[in-house]
Length: 444
Image (cartoon, rainbow, N blue to C red; front, side):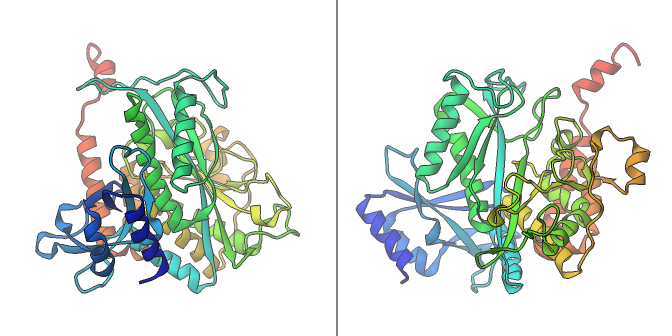
């Protein structure tokens, strides 16, 4: 028994923990959970806990349903909102009964990508800026959202509901060992942002899953609703999850080059080139819902075109220059991601796309120096700037012919994801919307 496992068992006893929740993600990134009594914990560490994989979206067929959840003791944390009975959680790795990794487990997908990076000598770090909306609680049967406030970007308001909420969320995240860098009001009414401090990609994906639970738990306790839907309002900006990324070799940031004009090394440039080369085919995962494309193509500074720049916020990939001469701060920012994505699959694809650029020594295209949104179609075409997919349907088409996505996700997740998203788009395409009725009734 290793030290971390001993620590967990001792803490459970000393803190009188009554329930341990085992967490894992389905293929779309929705959290799954099973609670166990403390008496079962040591056995779970030794042998895992069995469950019916066929009942989890994308996991297994009925005739191969037996799966095992193995708790990761390094992810042990008490849940601060479960005050009436001490409750802890751990994330799990999912295996088949023979001990082999379950091909449908998103955490295993990311681990495979991180393993490839490690073989190349790299550690992958991420820092997400997570946006979400706070809404008045919807009445049953009502789907028309109402923002909790009418503030704007960086507005400092006297201790209103949103300010209290961000304070409570940050304190709860910190209690769970998740470090927060910043929090502020975003540009749309009811929209907020909390930025998590840099961590390795696996820890960060776990942190994002936890973050979404914390935000929803606090909202429920305060009688309001939190939503990570990418674009709940037609006339306001949507919610994204801009993610800053860097590769390290030991303590050295391999993206940094003091002699380069933008302080970006040859390795960093090739990583960015890989992201741009594979941007269209990974978008179905980074932006996995029909509503995601309302954000990408609905204005509000969402990136819709495949290019890179420095201070250019219309670019898909940005090279921030906040501290240009500080090696540890060298990083690139990918701006398309939704805060509703599956973070395990998303970070696995971003990493492998960048590594492919390094392996194939892809050249970095010219920097986009103009406001890409303001250019005409002909001007963008002349500059070689292609668009991201305009719909989930178009994104699926780009994804299904991608070798990189298929290899990264594995055959099982790749096939399930495509089937699931085709079904979502087909159902959406059949809907008659209020916009169509408003435009058509009485005129057509």
